[in-house]
Structures are given as C-alpha cells and as structure tokens.
Length: 400
Image (cartoon, rainbow, N blue to C red; front, side, top):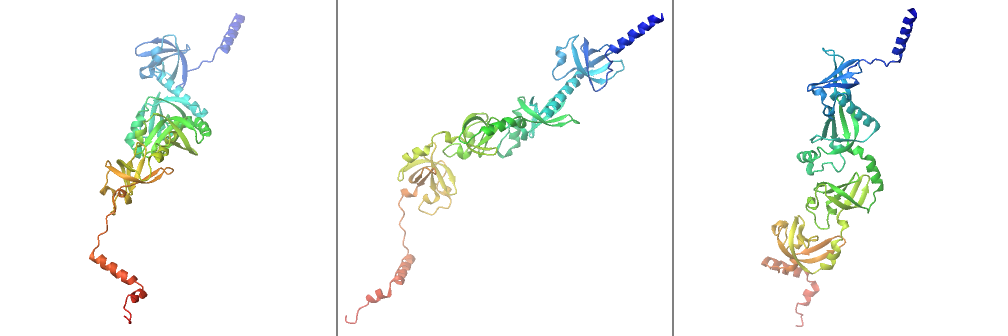
C-alpha cells in the first residue's frame, strides 16, 4: 500500500507541476472568460473554472456595443472592478475593458507617432472635442489642417464656432501630441498628421506652377486655397484684373479652384487667380485711346478721386483735380457711386493698368472776371515793370 500511495503522490505532484498556474482575479486588470448566461439585467462569465464573474447595469455597455452581438459560449475580455462581491462573484465591466483598450491604443499611437482616425462629437470656439469610452480628446483650432481652419473676418467668435460645428461628425486623421494619464485626456493634431505630406508637397512646389485646390477661407483681404496639406493666399489684388470690392463674390468655402503659384517664402505661399486668364489691359490699350470720350458708372469713391467702370474688368480714375475747373476738396460734393457720367481719356498706361479720365476736359475753362481792384493792381504792376529808358523816350524832346 505504501508503494501505491507513493505512486499516487508522484502522479499528483506531476499533475500540479504541469498544470497552468491559477490566476486569482485582481481589480484593475483585464481577464478573459466565457459567457455562460445572458439575462436582461446581467451577464455571467466563467473565469476558467476558478470563479464566476458578473457584468451588470451600465458596465455591460461599451463603445462598440459588444452586448448586442454576445451569445452564451462566446469568449470575452472584461475589466475587474471587484475581486468578490457579497454573492461571491467577481464584479466585471465591459465598458471599462473597452476604455482600457482604447486608452492603450492612444498611448501606443502617441509613443509610435502613428496616425489614427477620430470623429469629433462637439465643438467650442477653441476647437473640437471628442469622447471615446470616457476618454476625452481635444483638437485645438491651431492644430487643424488648412482645409478645416476657420478663417473668418475680424476673428468673429460666433462665426468661428459655426464653422467648427460644421466639422462635428466627420472623420479626422490625427496624431496624439499630448497624453494626460491622470485625467484621461488627450490633445490631438490634424496638422501634425499631415506634416510629412506638407513637407513633401512644399519641396515639390515651384513658382509658376498651376495647382488645383479648394477654397479654405474668404476674408476681406483675399481668398485662402488649400491643396496637398498646404495653404496659400490669393491676395485681393490677384483675384481679378478689375477692381475687387468683395472677395466672397469670387467663390465659396470648399469650391474647387485653379490658381497659379506666384511666390514662396518658407511656408508662406502667394497665389493668383487673375494671371490664369488673359490680361484685359492688352485689349484696353487698343480700345481706349487718349482723347476718346467715354461714358460709365461711378463704382468707387476715394479721397483722391472717383473710379469709373469702363467695362466688366477695366476701371478708369477721375482724379480729384480732373473733376472740375473749380477747386474741389471733397469728391462726394459733386459725384457719387452709381452716377452715370461722361469723361475724356487723358492717359493710358497698360503696363501699370491705369487709365486717367477727366470730366473738366469736356468743358471750357471759364474766363476770369476782372474786378476794379485787380485792374488797378495790373496797371501798377505794369508801370513798375516799365524800364526807365522807355519812359524817357516817351517824353517830348526840347526841339519839339
């Protein structure tokens, strides 16, 4: 019998030695298990025959809605909230397990510099906010790519917010640029995710190159166009050959446009729309000749004169001094925007894109009126200027 007991002892020892180590549930860790029962209020999970876990209430709902597709016999990962409750069950959470996986995904992306995709669910005037499994993320306005940066006149906060709200729900490729472990918060950057693309595109960009892009912003001084992660400005003077009063008349946000690269200074890119169409001033030099009388509408008033519309693209300037033979201090005293007037062309400079007009050239200069005082002054001046020998010669001689 002694031999038999010895054999059993050796067998048991061998079994224990070759058996997997028993892992007891530790709060704050992820554990694998098999679903044994699903009811309306709870999920029971077999934890390797060692114990049974329970998932109940909000802890059964995660961001990917695992519960919806769950069936008895399925293997799942769950987060351990408590090692044992009053019923002797291990308290588990699908929600926290999903959160831990998401957090680890963000941490891994931060450490590796990987580009990930996210979607914002809220906006404030400072940027875009998102929440995944309780993890809060923020994309500051300054970290948005050119195509999404809210360029508005006068930094109007209401308009900025409106532009940002339009971005809620769309997918963004971003990089994690800051991780706040203690508060479970992340700072994300769309601009950083496009850094390599921007760098490569900028290296290839040349002055004189035609490019296609989308309008990313319209402000008082011009139109911003985004392309290949870059952004350039079509200054108001480069939008059209004629006078441009309002850049918004020449496009809308997200409109596709073709532009010409006319300058590169670091990451500052200057673009032109007007240089892709023929210069109307070449034809203007043939049509508008000095001495010709033209008729048109006044479309702009300045302190130095008034601009007359000669055709859809060409304006002529009636300088303040060419409005009237009389001295004029304020243009608006005699002419207003919308007035139809006639003027004579007095200068044409196609290279400088200037046509000078004159209204006073169409009328004769009024004769100066002589006053008694003026006449007396002229007589006195004449006497003072007459040479002495001439006066003497007019006197009678003694022989006479």
